[in-house]
Image 1: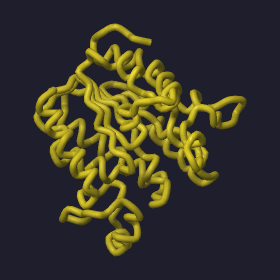
Image 2: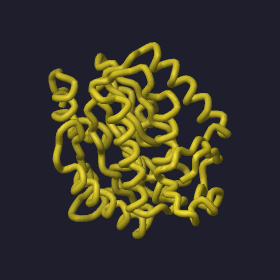
Image 3: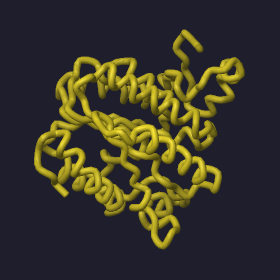
Image 4: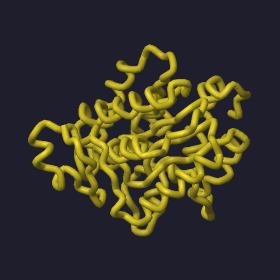
Length: 257
């Protein structure tokens, strides 16, 4: 394994770190910073200040799908603020989503202050979509990275319950869809015991008649359009409602669904 910190501009990590990969390192479970990106570095520093000030009861850890909670409209499909207010205002929540992050970069953030000095009641983890994009890490390596994240959270936040979400379906490619199913199958088997870690696969919310419901995604609305990957604000409201029974129990308050 690599003992020093690793820094890269984002993608493709597999190319930047190819010698380490050939030596047997699982990059998905190796802390990798993106601090050479100014916006990423500044967001990390800002989130450390926010965490110190807020001392949250609820944290969301993830990539751009989680960061999207901070987006506002119009148009309505990207206006996430009303949904966030409905479900998470008054719950002392902090959004730790960073667009483009893989499991490796989330692991770096966890080990570099983003869970230090806090004791939230619950953590929502949604990560892995970028592992199987351009970096093209395997389902097994991605699960190893997710396991490392869960293990770190359990060690650093022993009183925090974890809601682990499955990787959401997307319309990027047949390969990615197949890998997504494989990841979620492994995670469902691994975390079926419950306890402080609850696994929830939200795939069915995004399917209609056995096919991906592209109307649930904002990417086709962009100019130029992108393949379906990021849920609309309305789809994310459905996700929040599906999570509510679990989160309300973890937080010890009423369901807002």
